Image (cartoon, rainbow, N blue to C red):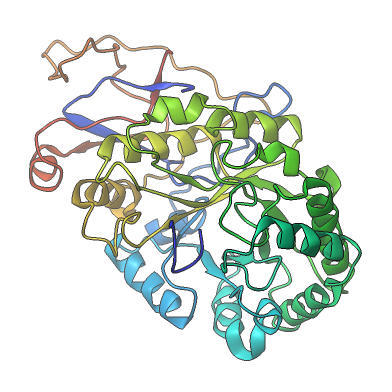
Length: 416
């Protein structure tokens, strides 16, 4: 999706209870997908009573939101952090315009404020979506796209990306994550892959080679298709492990009526993404995600957050305007309240110790309490009274006011 003109399981949640447990790693962060024998869970930071809540939050993995492509986005990030109780987004996400080559090159002054924001704190991450073609949203026909891709594969547009790389290095953001040619498996953009996959892959390789040749660079290149098959299976556009650092996915709650489990299991869906990245020894990301065709879908929001909690993307940035968002968009009050609760700093617990190396051990269930626990009208999975990396919260009053009804949920996974 374009910045301002968007289009246009492995595990089930545990039983619904009267207390919500919030995972300490709910905000997804650097790691390889869970479940691979060759990639055990990364070590978690040990708790330290000497650290303030703010310092503990700063040590948590990276999340952010797309709020605007220009300086307004930076101001809104501050406001979003206040809305989240002081839990400041660590990922700044912006897009280069795809209208003219001079803007794809970074344009004079366009990236300056983002560079200043990135340099202000060492733990921040700048994510930059970079179009591969000018006239990127002008509905260029397939035949012309095919011709452009063949010219690109021959090196005709290399100089533009060298200029961009030099500009980023000069601004001190040489470690920018480059989301190059996003959603290439679709039909929206001139930088789409389907008209000529082989030329598209060669073009990607040329861009990466050119940008990596600039002295001082430390870029990471994120290959980010949209979820599902779309115009072409996105695996047919993959340019090779030597030219990709991150395997991302743009994941929205669509099409209408498609459940989260179906989004997981569909061809080239969420599970395929995780499995593909694991097979290629790459971390995953979600550069764009959010609500869409199914409205204020609180179940989808909870499941998507749980999915990221399980699979540990390097970063995620929610698309925060209507119909996708949770802060700038008032159309999704229930999902907004849930997102705000789970990512607000008062509810982000201090991480517990985690042995390394080796996977996290499965906890032994403790005896159930003698007092009955209210449940949703489904057959509950027995839940231990204490779960790892969770903090119990008394949310009966909050949930009644913000979400409606008393039940709340825990993101700790139950058996399939």
